[in-house]
Every structure is written in structure tokens, then in C-alpha cells.
Length: 327
Ligand code: ASP
Image (cartoon, rainbow, N blue to C red):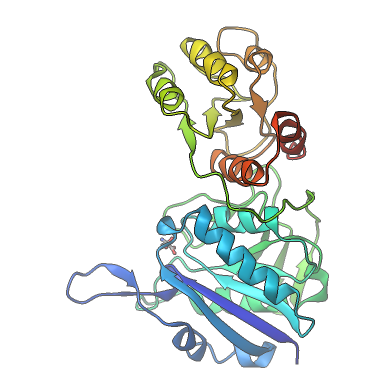
């Protein structure tokens, strides 16, 4: 049987309702998680590491960098056929994407989680774990980059997004679609994701902030980031990448101060394009020196910027690197 390494981090898949408060909290230890899903033993020989027991909104890029180091070591072991990482669904797409930026090996790395906690009827955790394990040991998953498996769909880290607060079918890849599916017969891929060469695994630049545009907002947040000498700023603009016209001055000042300003879109699908010439329009932002983040969402563009700055990319290299995310 293939060897599968399971790395647990917490999230709903490892949560139970605390009877004293009525609120779900991460509580299921790694060994217990595995013991509750005997079907895993039919798929692979299992080894388990508990990386942490956290809610995913409390896992930041620093922790994810150390998770990447742990997973990289597992990928380097020739006995390990695949790695599954269990994770809270709230920021699963961020961790999956950061791992995808940093990991090089062909050994499949599959993130999964659950929308219903272990104490809720109809929990989806065991099924997702089994499906993720099947994908992780499937030779067709090799070399596809980091994957997310939920609700019997396979998504690329680069495109996957949580789209619903509670639905089991919450994960989608807007504008790209899933890479494949799992059914009673097995694992089936019908697409391959675009890949980007890995970044050196260095500590991420910590002070990179995401500002979401809404019509009529003034430039207060951007000015505050300039005053605070942020490491970088990511803007989630409207449509193809446009912002309030009143932001142009602050954006120009940030760029002049040597603070990279990266532009993504608040639309879930599609890439940013320098189309519009009215104040705040994407063409004017490009001319101010703003760097386009292709089709990356704001949170993913932020991770790309944090890890690229951490790896020492200068402004030109940063621009060329982010241009690779156009599709
Ligand atoms: N709601 C989350 C989940 O589905 C909790 C988390 O992200 O930690 O796992």
C-alpha cells in the first residue's frame, strides 16, 4: 500500500461543540481524527503529524511558512506517496496557495477540511478526508501543485475560493473550474493548472496590507499605510482593477516611497487589465507604477507579495513574477 502522511492543523474538521458554551472549538487530536475514519486504512498506510490545533483565521503566513518547511521535508522522503493537510476552511485557500508558491516537489499535497464539525449530524469531514487521501496517493495528482479536495471536487490552490459561509459545496474555482472529481470509480482529472516556478522559502515580509475598494471611500487607509511605512499594499479594486479616483495621489505617493502597490480585483473570476482611463481607472494605475496581480484574489496577491518580498525580489522581479499569475 502507498504511504500517506497526514498533517493536521485544526479547523472545523477537528472541532466539537463545547457543551458549556455551545460554540464549536478545535478539540479533536490528530490520532483521534484518524481513528474516526477507518476507511483511510484501506487507501494507504498512514503516518500522522499534528502541526497545530487552531482555527484557520488564526494561522498567518509565518505559521504557514513553517508548515511549508514541514511539508517540504515530507515531500523529500521517497517513501511518502502523498501528503494530506487538514485545515479550517475559512483560510484554506490562503494556506494552499502559499504552499503552492513555496513547494517544488512532485509529491501530491492535498488540503481538505469540513464544513460541519465532528459533533454535527451529517458531518462531511470523514468523506472529505477519504477523498483527499485517494487524490493524494493517485499518480495522476503528481506535479499538479497543491490541491484542495472538498465535496468530491479537486481544485487547484491557485484558483480555489470559499464561496459560501455554510454550504458543503462551498469551494469553487471561479473563472477556471475544478481540475477533477472523485466518485465511486476513482479519481478523475480533466484539467491541469498553470504553474509558477517556486519562490525560495524565506520568512514572509510581515507588514503587507489588503485594502478593499468600495465606491466613494476616501484614501485614509492608504495614507495611514504610507505613514506607517508598510512593506507593501494590495488593493482589491472593482471590476478589471479600478479604484476611487481620489486614491490616485496616495497610490502615487506609496509608489514614490518605494512601497509596492499591487492590484487585484474584488471580482471572484478573471484577471485585472489596464483598460480604463478615467480617474482611478486601471490604465492610470498602471502608469502610476501599480503592479497587476493577474487573476489572483486580494488575499492570494497579498501572500504572493509577502513571500516574494521575503525572498528578496526587487521591483522589476516582483512585476515579472506577478505577471505570471495572469491565467
Ligand atoms: N469554519 C472554519 C472551518 O470550516 C473554521 C476554520 O476555518 O478554522 O474549518
